[in-house]
Amino acid sequence: MNARTNLHQPARVAPTTRSAFTLVEMLVVIGIIGILSAILIPAITGAIGTARDTAIRMEVDVIDQALAAYNLKYGDYPPDFYQWKDVERHFRTAFPDINDTELRILAQFTHVNDSLARCGGSGVTDPRTSSAFAHYPHAMDRAEALVFCLGGYSSDKKRPFTGQGGPLALVASASYPTTASDTDYQLFQFNSDRDNAFFDFGSARNSVIVVDGSGTFNPLGLAAPYAYSDDESVANALGFAQLPDPFPVAFPGVSELPVAYFSADNYQYALGSAAQGSWAWQQAGSKHLMNVYSPPGDLQDVGAAQVFVSAQQDTTPKSTLAGLPVVAAGAYEFVEPKRFQLVSAGRDNHFGGIFVPQGSGSYVTALPMFTTGQFYNPFGLPAAISGTPANLSSVDRYQDGYAYEKMGGSSPYTTRPMLDNITNFSTSTLDSDLP
Image (cartoon, rainbow, N blue to C red; front, side, top):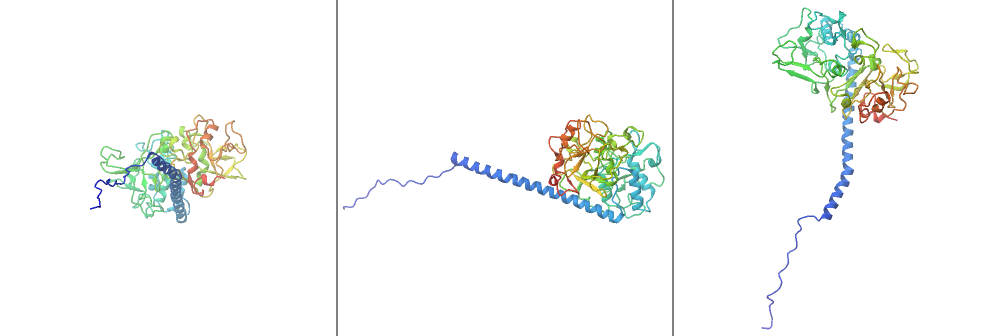
């Protein structure tokens, strides 16, 4: 047999299987991921920010429309509660048959004495007619006024506040007062079941706290649930203890701060007021008399909502504003001079603004100017600032921190928080309308 069989052929080698990337390949992949992240993350972040701006813009627009509907029904926009005379005039016009007890109870909530205390225990049943009490401009602040007025009144024409579906509800076991007492206001709590709403605050987050009455806050000392608001931040920031009341603020949208509402009737008090009485908190230049909205938290963290002036110069300027002499050589018109201003803190939840700089004199502050981003004070500014009118000409693009420094104070801000504020008169953010 000539054929031979090779019994020693080498075995076939199996292909090698790799179980990991090489270092070079890993570096290439990491580099690609880094490049994609650099491209996509800013785009995604920007899209999220734009979406939040749009949501807040829609929220402000809906509130604006609700105020227009309110005006159509009652013949006027609601008061912002800075002045009592506006409040009483408005509600007597809107509800000609209103029971005076309704207004007296409301006044018991909003009037305080020289020690910033309400009338309970004083023997004064109607603080409107007593020289020992006066309306406090921030007892119902610029955000609380929206919830009180747009949340809906009762269909009871004599009891629009305390009737069924109104903003105030009786505490359990209490009955409507038939004889006047200095503690009548303590019978009422926040009502979450309201009728005839212009804006649905029912589903919104709000500052309402419900306590069960067992050793917790209840004005009557009752062992019964009591709903009240503890957001009295404006009052606290201005120097007196929290006064729980049934007037909450609401956070209906994506922002963590409420929208502030300023009635055109009271724009002039945005920088302070002449003396409104003889008490310390009523003196000229007092912070208590400034028409601002300061939310819960430190000024450096949340700022203060302010009224805006426009870049349109007033051709017939007043000689005084809120009783204070206008010394600037010129003046600017307020934005929305016949309606109102709505101000949202925007996506950063910070109003920014100029609010009584540290070390400044009485009512030395400034208002933001739409659309230039400058700041304006009609009462004259420190000598270090020049410009006619006094508009802090070297400050623009809402540099509120820099404006603080120019006015002799130290800046509480490390950024420009006003830029992303959204209002009812801006296109979107304030930044979007800057020239």
